[in-house]
Image 1 (tube, rainbow, N blue to C red):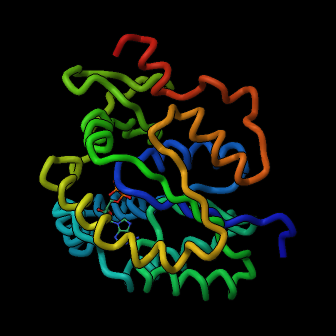
Image 2 (cartoon, rainbow, N blue to C red; image 1 turned 120 degrees about the horizontal axis):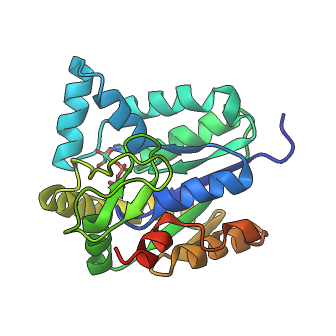
Length: 236
Ligand code: ADP
């Protein structure tokens, strides 16, 4: 059993910056960041019947079934690269998923999770989601001027794209769903290793909060390394 394994859960509404922080923390801790939304988007690209069904569910802003997502997470956590733990972004989202994860972690002899709840007001969330773009090649997330077109990834030059479920209707539905499901899930975790994160701060300030709760300091190489910061400097 790995001695210093860590399981970290990022919980919070869409647009709160979980994906950006998961990528950064993954690089710092050397454990994989697992986004169930990204796993589902990949599966949806297959154009199989299952893929088409997933695409429909995601575009409508609903959740996919607990069974399906639990099975996908079960398979993913059994892989070699999760032996020292992982960062879970967007999972669990229901109490049934949280209970499933609890028993899976026990089976895999992984520790109880540290839960970070990203908090941000709704106006700020919508503002961020409308500006959110990502690189289809490397997955890097950017915050851009929503009117700007043909923006390229700073890492590999690919044209940035917007998620198909980042439409106003789907965003409203996802925010509503989050509001309705969050209380029950937080009741499950609040008495455990649980921390609230002020997600309205700059990416570096949010990282500092996460690392402080984990008893770590910000690696100096990371300061001002976020693509958002770079885009802001580029006047975008
Ligand atoms: P966001 O947090 O912006 O809604 P995600 O990328 O985390 O985006 O998820 C995109 C979509 O994938 C969700 O709207 C939902 O349909 C599906 N999804 C992701 N994670 C889960 C989960 N744990 N349980 C059920 N559905 C999920």
